[in-house]
Amino acid sequence: MVRASAEANKRANKQTKLLDLLRRPAGATIATLVEVSGWQQHSVRGFLAGVVRKRLGLELVSSLEADQRIYRIVAAKQA
Image (cartoon, rainbow, N blue to C red; front, side, top):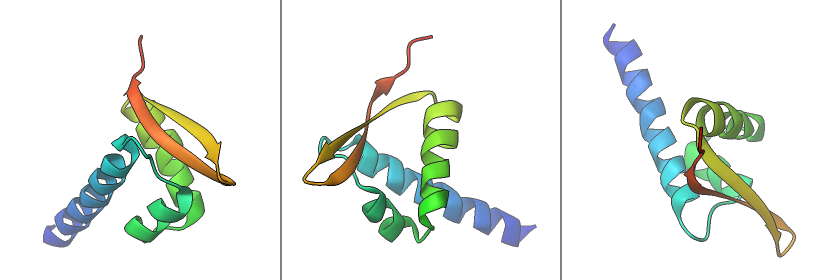
């Protein structure tokens, strides 16, 4: 039971770090999110779609800057 709780806390801490990066005005690239989380690229993309957009209902925008896709959270979606 303690191990499951520790794993959940680690996952929550990683998610918090990623959300903080995405909320910055500069945003974050997939490469940055992979480096911070230790997850693979497909896991980071799943986090963006499943957690950020669907579960949390945050508006995630992306832009192409200097040949890199930058992701940012701009605001909560309007229902």
